[in-house]
Image 1 (tube, rainbow over the protein chains, first blue to last red):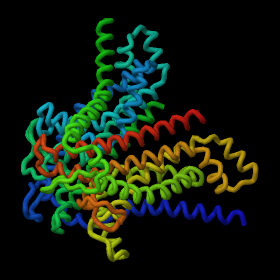
Image 2: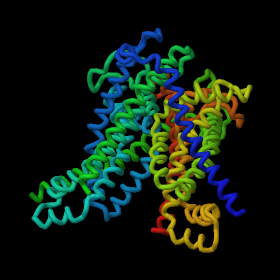
Image 3: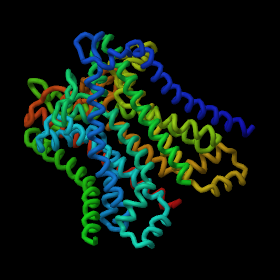
Image 4: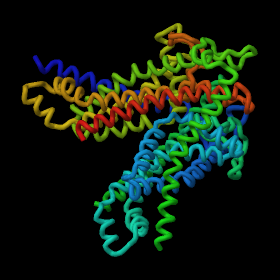
Length: 279
Length: 291
């Protein structure tokens, strides 16, 4: 008798879990059904157009890749540097503790607020305009907390004995970090970085806020070039009333999801490959 | 040699300071523009006014309609995310065989990793049309569809943080409960959940904060009509969607329209900041109990 409510509870909980997974399946199937027929080589390499049938995403795809590469170039050195400082140097000081609390808080600030920061700081105050550099700088600040947090975890996982062995041989602190600790932590750092960047590549709101253009008919040709990215192009097409453009949006979503899947797969592959070696 | 070591330490310290600079930058940018905004609009009108028409010929700057829109969509999202997230957390932590857990958790994480613009598409072109078949009066843009989709997006956050909190409850408490003859459900709901309550609450608060700051779903599917209503079936506008709306137009710097987005952003930042602080404080307390 007592087992009945227990069974019922378990069934309800399992049903809820299945419902969540069904929502994911519905999302993917819906986008696939709407957009798969539009996918073609011409769609990937085409430029935007007033006519939905001949519009493509080459400008947005190259924009996304370019912006993410610049973001990585800015965020990775700073993020890893900050993590090394917090983990290896200043862990005990009050200032380090404050920085730590600050980073946890930053990780939960809505992305659109970073957009306002980018607009006020990079676009206006520093005069970068609505350029690739302004967009990438904004996204770099956005992913910085994530990169710092995951890098710290990777550094923490490096056994103490490796550091002590290096010190015992007379190495300085930095030599120990550079030659011993970082190589061991590298796969973990890379995995975290790829995951953080895959979040950035799907970000729309901060880039709209800094004024990234919604209609760009060219491939960005430098750091100061105006740009658009895949999510903004998707947003632009979804917002139009004509169904033909919404089909384009679905097809562009499929490309974006494929890009994300590739990045995530790379991260998982890296983690699995090197985790075994360590142990 | 010593000098190089010293320089490196300072360079690394400078990297760590960038994060402090980010916070300072956010506060500075928002404060400067908000103060300039408040010089033209009295703070009482901004906070308590019930009409938001800054782009009209006779502008009104009462932010309450945007706040109401934000609260409405977030409330719908939480009505979806909390029960579902908590139930899945209890199931995954207390019932599921380890193999099922190992497969389900990454799939839930995919749900959290889908770009929000994709969820916006889903809300506008799948969920809303589906709901319109059941609710005839539902407008094409509304709070209900995006609210539900936002709930699905936040569910993994609630579920995974709550599950972590439940996993941190010592085994001894569960075993004591079983020894007293309690069933699994009684142990889960009356021992594990109460013991993990501050961790679970922290997860829920963080989820609310995420819902308030979420932008693209509402910008795409909730409409652009700021109105003071609790009716989830009509178009509304949230604070985040308003910022997007203005950013899409070409608003010249220094105008009052340009400053409104910073004033609204300030409100958004303060709201989410307080929620994040509360969540962090609760998590810290939870760690003290079982640390």
